[in-house]
Length: 337
Ligand SMILES: NC(=O)c1ccc[n+]([C@@H]2O[C@H](COP(=O)([O-])OP(=O)(O)OC[C@H]3O[C@@H](n4cnc5c(N)ncnc54)[C@H](O)[C@@H]3O)[C@@H](O)[C@H]2O)c1
Image (cartoon, rainbow, N blue to C red):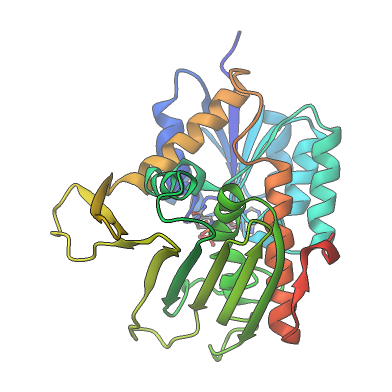
């Protein structure tokens, strides 16, 4: 049997996190073609990763390959994913699954009819750091329900589409969707969201700043205060922790620059316990995520950790947060279908 061929559609930032591991797996799969609307990407990426075929029109790539990794801006996900699934290709689709519910439903419909498998790029499901704190929660070490708090503010990505409402949709879909998905994975289904969002960046059309609370049926909560609306070079304090009725988890920040491990600390009345994780946890999560995709292509795995239904559930929360953020009204997930 010949080696299955993979096509990469979109050779920008995130593709560079996926291609090194696909190269490592060259005995199992061949990176055969790349499509990017920008011809300069041939030299920047395709040549660098030894991909023999390059084109600017992704439609030409589909018949040449068995599987595709779709790494284009979010508003373009649906059209490409639907077409690839119709051609029965295995599809690795970067998160978020799409920008709108209409697009999401088209992808879900195509996935249902396809012989190909759809995997969504929720890399945190492979991240040993996040999996470690999930284990602590699920073991009840800090009690339940918990509140997971995440505070972050910066100028956001310098690439324009990320902060345009109809393209990337801003941080409350593009960035925090990792938190939505991981919270769903950890806490179970969500019940309602409440958000208050605004646009701060002068060139942004997306809601780029604000707060959101996502409440889960379990009683657990995800609390976000994020901004991509700061002027460049302005700093702000961040926070990332978990609190529960029997304790908390905090992240140690003053780790030596060259340390191999990071750590978080479980605080309980009875004392403290440090949990170490590799500082390469996220980088190796990208590798394991691609290993899963290769295993799906080779028929060694039939179900991805995050597939169509996980992509859909995280889209429901994203769209509920944006809706609540616009209207300042609580949105029940039962209303978002
Ligand atoms: N999982 C993660 O951690 C993570 C991190 C960053 C980005 N992402 C997601 O990955 C996707 C891409 O993000 P990025 O940071 O790589 O963006 P990017 O802007 O760096 O790269 C996108 C690439 O797609 C190309 N492109 C645009 N339109 C195209 C078209 N019609 N046909 C073919 N190519 C086209 C662009 O020329 C560019 O090279 C987004 O959905 C983003 O949300 C995921």
